[in-house]
Length: 318
Image 1: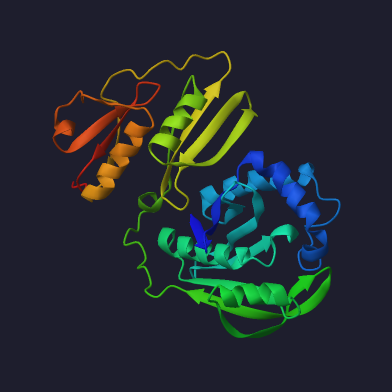
Image 2: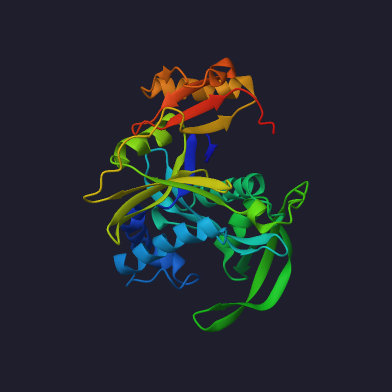
């Protein structure tokens, strides 16, 4: 997701393991500004802390407990972090937090990132309330909350413990204009997150197909996890994601038939045409469907492993 001001765009994306070094660099640059209010950002912060924290965010995102994002500029430079965390499922609220490296401060980066994260949360989750809780003396964070459109509701006494000392905190809120109704399904499996996993002999090629061709985001990945490498792709907050794995010395092979399908329904004609065009532009030509039914309203594409994806211009009906 991207937010801009006068052409100065900032982008939010999920953390990846490769962000560890940039996170450490930005944190060490910013100790003087961030450490007084965020204890984790100290002069001893290093890769041994950044790497496990990033790995934990991948798991938290899958559980729906937290959604942490990298803030970067148009050139891909790491500017800081922004997150929707401390999710309270019972009351459908969460904390909205942010920090920006010292060299990027004072340019509206944090407020734009906060607005983008809030918009994402209300469009991709069922949360109805986000809270920004900032120490009364943290003037910079309070200005960001106000510029992001958060409403000051009051001051909570001894609400935050910073460096072992209780601080009164200003409590701000952002709420969605219309509440999203709770799921009508009562069976837990009807509300379960769907993880579709399969092996691949070429993780790099299959990642390019689903990331560049279909527009999926890389949600996470792992290396040499009990002999397996893997990558997870999908969309933050969506109720599903794909996982591809590779084990050294094991040949996964190609799809067993031409009718192994992943079908994505796009009822809006313009959106369907854009999705088809993106795959074609990424170098993936359409192929005739094994079942002629899918050629009537859709286009079929084959990924590097021979598994097929159908983009269907229509709504799913049972």
